[in-house]
Amino acid sequence: MRNIIIRDMVVKDIKDILIIENLCFPVPWSEAAFLNELLNNAISKYLVVQHENRVIGYAGVWRILDEGHITNIATHPGFQRNGIARELLKALIQVLEEENITKITLEVRASNEPAINLYQQFGFTQAGIRKGYYEDNKEDAVIMWKET
Image (tube, rainbow, N blue to C red):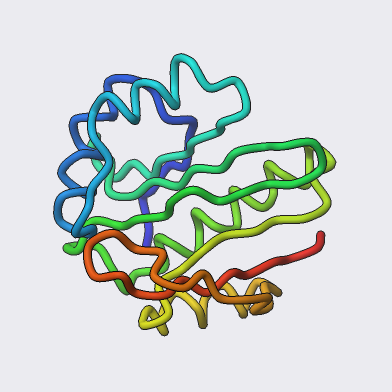
């Protein structure tokens, strides 16, 4: 997709992010959770994709020693299938590599084949299962890892 900007998330982005959260996830993060991530969590890093003065996607990671734990990646449903998540993941990995993070992990719903395929294209491999990980329906999560 053309005419996008990837930049650091700021507090004023949370309004748009909450819309995406509520459209994409059965158990969305709250405004307080995002504020805490931005203002109080020194190990967090969040990026957004901006298109025409609107945030249409975001991704976050926690940096713990030499590991990055991707907390979330989401794209507004009206902009999905346009490579937004791919660009976000690419940018997030680049940030981590610049900070000498050598291992990256995440959890993804076992049924989310498009996301699993995307992560595999970036070199993530399946490393295990977290049984009943998701609150809403007790779905398993696939644990994935990548070494940079």
